Length: 105
Image 1 (cartoon, one colour):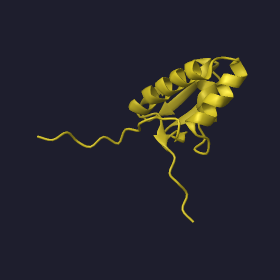
Image 2 (cartoon, rainbow, N blue to C red; image 1 turned 90 degrees about the vertical axis):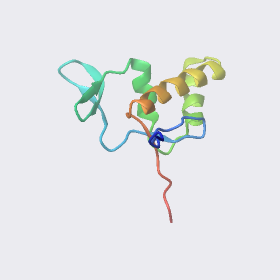
Image 3 (tube, rainbow, N blue to C red; image 1 turned 30 degrees about the vertical axis):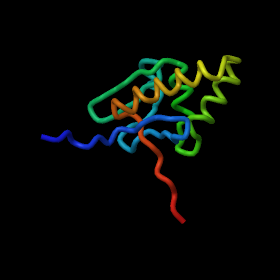
């Protein structure tokens, strides 16, 4: 029996992540926290994860996001890069993130 083909995204610095159509990053006024809403699922990312997710617009690459975060927090790029890629990969594995499709002419 063969494994079903995974639609999972492999996150790298070249990836251009974006929330899939079924997921939304939204501020929950009741709880006063940011949440990712998906069918029958809610995820409450921490403050830095929210910052990163707000940069996941499908136009920026992971490398761009890492550069912005490293500059903002004046932290070593390699450390920030490892953390950002690990966080984004975890969200992709859970179905909360996908690869932006290339626009064709």
